[in-house]
Length: 78
Image (cartoon, rainbow, N blue to C red; front, side):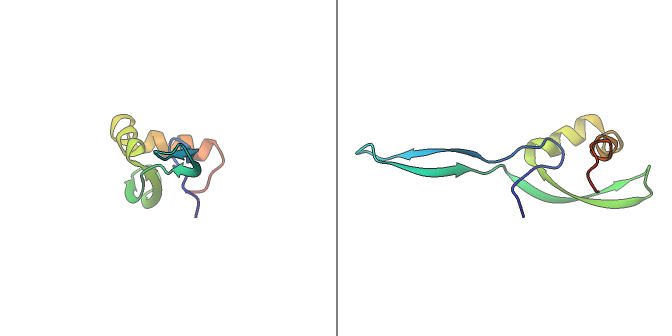
């Protein structure tokens, strides 16, 4: 499974780890993805979303109905 937030679309960031001797090695910064279940009254069922911690805060702010409608408008499956 990819490290991608279904709400915000956050993907891993890439860069280098730089050691004391300034040797650079590739690394990646993964978003804090959580699997979370929500009850969606408009659909009449629960949905399981793979969301980042920031995405959970977005759901708390906007509401699950609005967020799910945005996901469905993009053509993603919920």
